[in-house]
Each structure stands twice: as C-alpha cells, then as structure tokens.
Image (tube, rainbow, N blue to C red; front, side):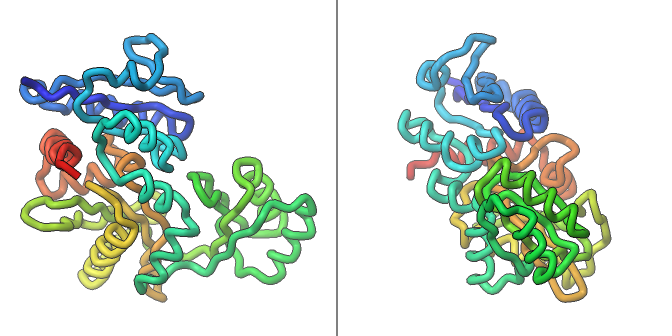
Amino acid sequence: MRTIVGVLRGGENKYEASLKTGAEVLQALDRDKYDPRDIFIDRQNMWHQSGVPMFPARALQGVDVVFNVVHGNYGEGGELHKILDSLHVPYTGASAAASILAFNKHHARSVARGLGLKVPYGKVVEQNPNIEEVAFELFRTFPHPAVIKTVSGDLRVVAEDFHSLQNGLERVWQRSPKALLEEMINGKEASVGVIDDFRNEKLYTLFPAEKERVPGLFLPHEKRTLMDAARVIHQGLNLGHYSHSNFVVSKRGVYFIDTHSAAGVGLHGEGQFSKSLHAIGVKLSHFLDHVLSLARRPK
C-alpha cells in the first residue's frame, strides 16, 4: 500500500517560491511508493484541496505524512506545526518549538554566539513613533552600511545613509514591532545544507553553495569552517530532518547570518540546496524518500 503524502504549499510569504517548490516535490515523489496530495494554502492561510476550501482536518483526512514547503511565519514559525501536532499528523522538519525559536533571527543569533560562531554586530530596535529621532541616533552610533531585518520574517533592507536607514526602519516596522539592525559584513556569501542521518552520517553536510548576490570560490579551510558551522547551528537550534544556513566569508572570518528549517528551504531547481544535492549525485526523489522516512519515525 502506498504512503499518502500531503504536500503543503503556498502561504502568505514567498508564495511563488513555495508553489514552485511544491510542484517539484509533487513531480519527484516516487509513484510506486507514494500517493501525493496537493494541498494548497492561499495568502490568507485558507486550506484548499482540488480547488475547494476546507478546514485542515478535512484536507488531511487519510494523509499519512505531510511534506511542508510553506514559507514565512505560518509555515516556518510554528503555526502550521501546531495544527499538524493537534491532528497527530507527522510532518517533515523541526518541531513546533524548535521552528518558533529558529525563525526568530535574534534568538538564532544568540544561540550561534553562545556556540562560538561569529555573528555580525547588531541590536534589536523597538518600534517608536519618533522614527526620525531614532534613525538619527542610530545613524550617529551604529556602523554603516547596515542591514535592517524583521526579527521574524524575510524582509531585508540595506541602509547606506540616513534616509535609507529611516525608510528601512519604517518598512520593517510596518511588518513587525521589532527590527533587527546588523552591520553589513562584506565578503563571499554561502549557503550550507545539513541532512539528518544521511549516507551513514548523523549530520551529513552538503558542500557550501555560492549565494547569488556575492558569489565566490571557497578555499578548502573556508569550506571546512562553513560546514562545521552549519552542523553546529543545526544541532544547536534542534532543527529536524534538514536545514540550510547562510554565512558570509569575510577577511575577519566566517559569520553566521541566519538559518532556515526544512519548510523554508527551496527545493526547486534554482535553489542552492537543490544545487548542492545535485553536486553530490543525489536525485530529488531519493532525498524526498529519505526525509519522509525520517518524518514517519516514532518520536
């Protein structure tokens, strides 16, 4: 009897990327072993199956395991995980508790620093109606250029002068009551994937993939440092099944930037994780089979 896999895709953030990833997962699943169900979640987080809106319990009726590729707070930040836990449906990726903590960039930074990894200098800035005054003080005291991010989420704004700093804070505060301000680290950007219990290794680490913004070849010692750091943060954040973390290799060393649990990892053909799988000769269908077997293990 084939395993029924509910592939959850869509959601409010990175909608198109999630749809693309979900489509590739649906196509790659081995039909001799799996019976896939396409479960679509719209931008308002309403669930649909075969074009019909429905509650999660009905959409998941008969599903043996969920493959979650929904990005953003709903899919990565623990909300979706709590729904699946309440319905006793196993799913790919980290637990609800681990997902909530990993999705919080400030928490992830603190964990990384505590584990001995380098992180950019940064601070959390609370929403303030006196935005011009706050921006002026930060521009006077904080190293620039700087990067402004939502503490939980994917909005990222580069501030090079006072006006871009003020505008960036305003944009981020529209999404979140807290902004994370970080110094910009110049260097080669890298993404490193980690897979649990793969190829006879407890934490199998993929080769570092170059990020699109600032590509660059990595020296052997840089590769080792990147791979070690990815394992450390994967384990330190208690991530499950697979993850990928972003770093910058600078003249001052390797800096941890952020990490994505399984749901936030783009498995479409253009994604760094997929390229790293291809580099070691692993087909997407093989990877999916491995992750689904992990998800169905008794906890």
